[in-house]
Length: 448
Image (tube, rainbow, N blue to C red; front, side, top):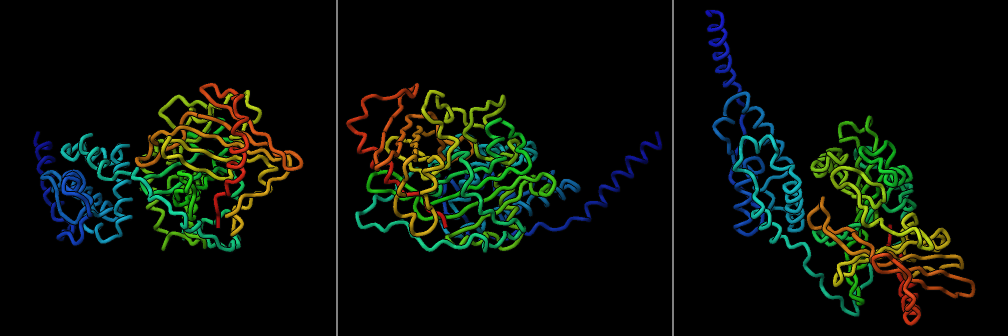
């Protein structure tokens, strides 16, 4: 009994001594709080400021070492990633983008950290509070109406892709992405961009088979983004090129960054995004909510079924085998969104058609001259909200598939398949010339 008492006293004394080792948590007044309505700020203050601000807010049990050490580490790390006390000093677009990311962290359960929430239940963001932030962000505000004299997307002479510098983490730029196949597309209302997500042969085969949990080593994704540009036809087309992002799977080599190599090249000159190798922390933090999906946000369009939470998009892949061609395996020429009908469309081309496509440089402003034997397929889907990203929409149920077959002497045949079963519409002859002209007139989405 005496030994037990001595051990308890010794433990208590040791715990008291540990309280002397308390490195500080710096606290200072806010210099530039995030710009948002008072009700939004109050929600952030209640649920996020304990870690993501320059204020020092610790519960009494957080003050006791060794819990204090863990709390201090979490606070300092959180401030590095996001600090609402200084976020207001950044441009409004960056502030909005940060709030969108915060919403996604919250609704996917990544923030507040589950271990923090277990001891601090008051930090939980209620569905009503989350709805308040979403309403403020309003990602689907209409784009400005175009004027007849609106400038076309900028075009410049293509750069030599073999001269593009690697990212700061040594990930090399992969110029072969232009020939990869489509995995999915997103209509991003949070930053008014259109995106194609392409995969190399390994990634494409994995998506088709459902072997994506995890994705196999050698998988490569290219996420290509353009500014949205509303045309006189009322459709939203790809405008100026923004960036291309690469994800390269190598579980051993990139063990410290969730098994992926990350890279981003921006503007028409494809400049590496990072200022140093620490930029990778932005990538891994942003993808933290989907670590259970191998850190991948994209729901690939595939007929492969996976018996778990939604990680593939089966609806969009539901094209019947009775179609004369299966375009989902073809390469992509361009895409657009119809905001009135909440639909998105992708123009595919067979190998003959793609030989005429020149997406790089000034030639991209004009439609290609397709040779005989070319087949174009315009697949249109209804849209649905992306379950992984607030402010994005992805393809849902196919609405129609239109084919244009180029024959000799510039003759073209038009066929349209529509309805719930995508059966052929025999009444298309009256509009075939118009639709052929529209489809053949779509210029390729421009690349640097």
